[in-house]
Length: 222
Image (tube, helix red, strand yellow):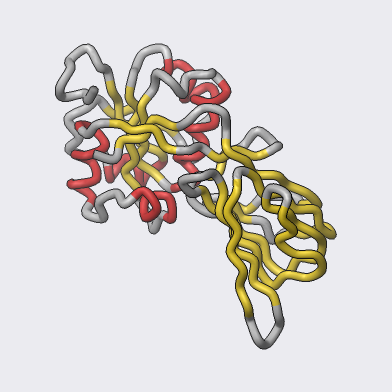
């Protein structure tokens, strides 16, 4: 059910930072202005008031909102629209409109559908892409060894089954292997190269696991 089809479905645009507020200008839904990567104080009160949140922001902003929906166990009854304000692997994967007014119209008035949600073992989520560079260690996709030794780059993204991983090896002659599964786990020497949905991890990483969550995300895709 969409906001426009059923007046009982309540929605708001969550405008993250100055860029999100500019993108939300002219929205028919009420606009809630928050900071970038909003947390519990900004989002949790909205979950009791609205059935649809349209996030105007970056992939990192969207991930922050999804974390709050997941932690409040509201994935089944809150739909999520997305209006990206920067290049977005998440929007590209979901094939959302590139034109801002079309993206806003879809996010506010489109129908939602269930899509797999990938989370990690630290309580975060992965919506677009994660990347590590120049890592030494071992990684598995489900029970399959993805690499054992050195990797020039490791990219992890959600897919229809759960997780997709691209492992690039070799210094001069690059070769890439692709893995699909429900989970991807890596253990490595300390690295500060991890970036998730455009946000640096902020601390050295020695291990991380991404896996498909037990509940899907109600995403507005048309």
